[in-house]
Image (cartoon, rainbow, N blue to C red; front, side, top):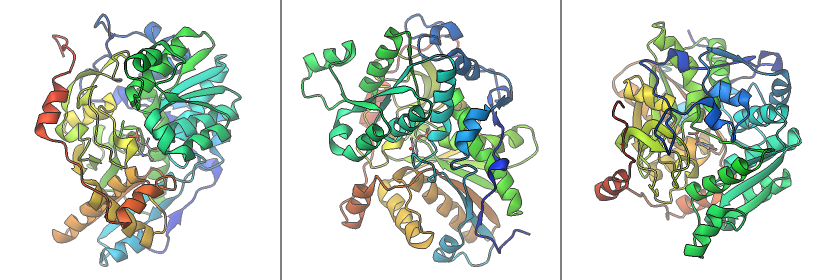
Length: 461
Ligand SMILES: *Cc1c(COP(=O)(O)O)cnc(C)c1O
């Protein structure tokens, strides 16, 4: 019987997991390698050396199930980890789930200095770079969630941090830019005149408002040209998903303390890292034949990578500079409608997560943003925390799972990842409360046009 007398589980810092779980050796089927964008040949560790330190490259391709977390990283994690887990008693009540047969739990990652799960990988990436002698990290950021988490991590390990921020966000969201600068980062509006790729865009389109793809090209260019500089990515790659498994490893122990077990694990997916982080330690049990947990990935209807995309090799960026990754994709030229969940507006997803969707182990679902914000406001008025627009998608998925179980008169335990707060997304709440939020759908024509730009596929893929 589950414990009904507790609201949250907070463990002492001595209970922070000391190793990350790497799902690669447990994934079904033969792994598909990333391919070189120029030659189409599999990418080896040497190809990645200009961008990442060897330690992170080894994690990226590792077939070891467990990777030790360095003591210096654990010392930083003590500032906010283990993060709390809650039983959503008040939300259940607001939903009329009174029988106790449908129970909702959430892991709360908004307690980190960056306000989301992203410092879980920013901190180890900064640490491993510092240990390898790196002086500076470059990266791109859209709304600024990743850039600010990396700026925080670089400040701790005395690294320079240079962020290329999509120009439209730079101008419209000065709050996160100031946050990055407060942590000591240098922030450029992208396209900028600091790089060849930026200058080229500016020459052709002086009024360009930028894109994530352009910003990636600028950050990669600086890292590739300077020996003391590396590049850092906040999602999609294997080592990023591995770092995030600290969420799920803690969650399992906390669910044990609640004396309950999730039937379905839910998360929002932008590039896949927070959901991989919560779900992979549970997927390990299913892959080993020890559990029957269901998995539900939730994305916006305006950027429906898993639900309407094609499984194919595609570039990670718009310019076609990154390796080709096997994943569900909407096409690397895809420009999603400006939905408020900025972190979910990416054309692809982590190859490991995509493999699990393709294998039928993970389900995927999409929602328009208005019902997502209805759920977010209901949550704020019951549980109190203000969800980021991204995890509000997971919340909506979790609520519908619980309501469907009540409808079917089934017992169901739902666990979702509340991966960040919405304190920098107040304008989205303002639009919703004023009734000005619109549902933005993707037409078949636009989807087909974007998928038509997929690169030629290798014969054996
Ligand atoms: C970046 C971000 C996301 C999307 O990235 P994933 O890699 O899919 O986790 C989702 N939520 C928040 C709060 C973010 O900052």
